[in-house]
Amino acid sequence: MLKCDFGNLHHEVERLEAAGAELLHLDVMDGHFVPNLSYGPMVIKSLQALTDLPFDAHLMISDPGRYLDEYVAAGCDAITIHVEAVPQPIPLLNRIRAAGCLSGLALNPGTPLSAIEPALSEVDIVLVMSVEPGFGGQAFQPSALEKVQQLRKQAGQDLLISIDGGIGPETIGDCADAGCDLYVAGSAIFDTESYQSSMDEMKKLAAVPAS
Ligand code: ZN
Image (cartoon, rainbow, N blue to C red; front, side, top):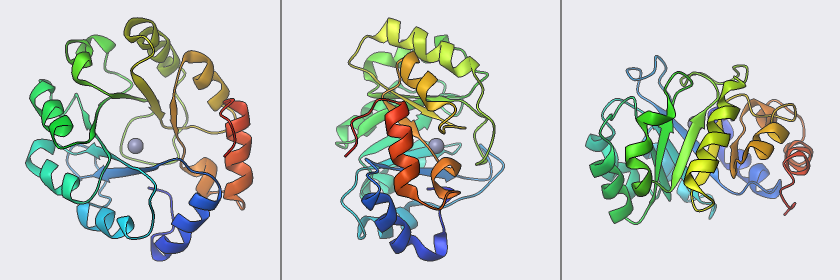
């Protein structure tokens, strides 16, 4: 939801629902962990009133533990923190699960899988960043695919693997082949005329049953 029209959130959510989006991925940036600022729990809470879609909050913030309760209260269904921001993430992942949310752990392109391995048993979703976090519209980094493959081999089928950054018709098929379950697309939807046809095309390429 970083690339949507914030002046027309109601309309944007309606278009995404109609196009068959399965969840809304909310990029939260604090101007510290990443250089940009985006939105926080108040905006997420107001989005809640507009849809029943699950909310997946991607916290690109330095001290997620401090604000966690606000994101839970805002109605997030999954909350993802960055291992670069929280190198010992297990206690926080446990708090996320205890709050009834899916726990997510994200890693940047330059961070090795070994950084998240000790925490994997407490993680429901690993978010593999295929661009540097902080800006929409960047080119996909193919090295992310190796990470996904390796993670899928290591973690088996129970773990959800999500990929974020540069996802579109040119890249989504490779992500599916590598073993991804969830695809975060921004420009590939919001910069097109028809969300429906963009989403249908990508679902086909990822062999996700169209809804
Ligand atoms: Zn994201």
